[in-house]
Length: 195
Image (cartoon, rainbow, N blue to C red; front, side, top):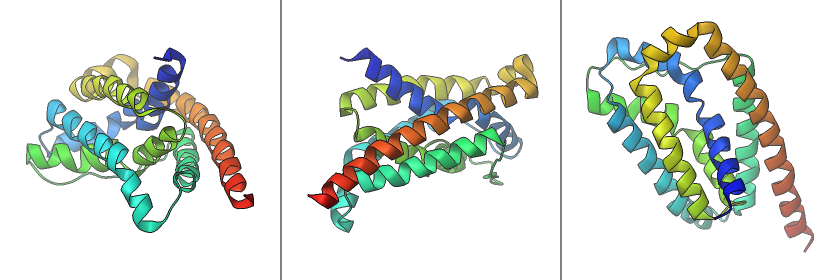
């Protein structure tokens, strides 16, 4: 096990998931719906694992090379990084009191395991092995659960300004990660094209 790669994959997912930045949206969702931290975490992990192991079949069906998807994913990561830096949020609030449906939609998808996260998984798959990525998902599932379970306490302790500072910092880091993934996978595509 390469612990450097595990740390890199885990931190990349942690930044993309942006659970700290999601706290305001979770708090807004809680005003109109019951949320289960266990169910939301479970649904999120299942969605990520399913896409990790079966997402490649989508590539086969549409004749897409993983590097093409990885480049698209890196662009989405860049967009998420910019969004975090400027504090832009999208309102996925759903007027429902159904704990099961609210924990799945909109919390597990698209807030947690949304397009950005799934694109990142495929981008990571082009760099790391499945074992490393699965461990990164499981480690981040602990973070997902803890944040959902204690989002009221977190906001009370660090305040809105603390959430903003953390989100802006991860935005910059995410931009760097996105640029690195874009360049490395673009080189792979150029190599494939020239051969």
